[in-house]
Amino acid sequence: MKRNRDHLRKAGKYILIFHICYIFIIAAASLLFIFIDPPFISLMGYRYIFNDIDSKKHYTVPVQYIPRKYLNLLVYTEDPTFYRHIGIDFPSMYSAFKANTKYGKKLYGGSTITQQLARTMFLFPEKLYVRKYLEVIAAVTMDLVMPKQRILELYVNYAEWGRGIYGIQSASYYYYGKSVYKCDQDQVLRLITLLPSPCRYSPYTFERRYVLRLRYERLNEMLNTYYQ
Image (cartoon, rainbow, N blue to C red; front, side):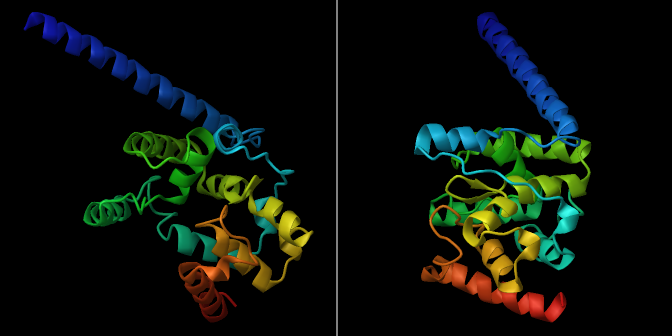
């Protein structure tokens, strides 16, 4: 019995040390990335090693150069409570957990923009509960350290937008040959539509998938109704 308690105490000590180190690394990196753009993110390495996908030329764009109506639309569709939560949205996560339990598959993640950014920058895309746990810790830490506007800026510049394409500016140059702030409304809407499945479809092919076609139609309707 005493030996078991010693093992548990030692395991607890190592778990505590791991959490402290992990939070410190995320906090330090988040503080640094307030002022500079990351030269490399974990998803780039993951795609190269496990999917044999080279990164395309990466472009960034200051968030203030993207028309506010497009940012508002992106936030509303990806994370409506972005400006109110602490990095995670418990109701969304609970709804996703119930849906996954019901269907017996990891179909939904309930991830906020901050969680998506944490996964892209520091973790990996595999749908594992341990990754989700680490993602939650990272997202809360990032939200405590970074201003919301900087989180959003990093998200639009580093989210996966295609095979080896990271960020909306990179996607805009790759697909349209011009900066995102020179794109017309339909082109930007097609890029935003693409976010849930960027490696399977392009702005020209997503209409093959019914869910993405509905997303595009809904985004178009919202933009014309609320953001003109």
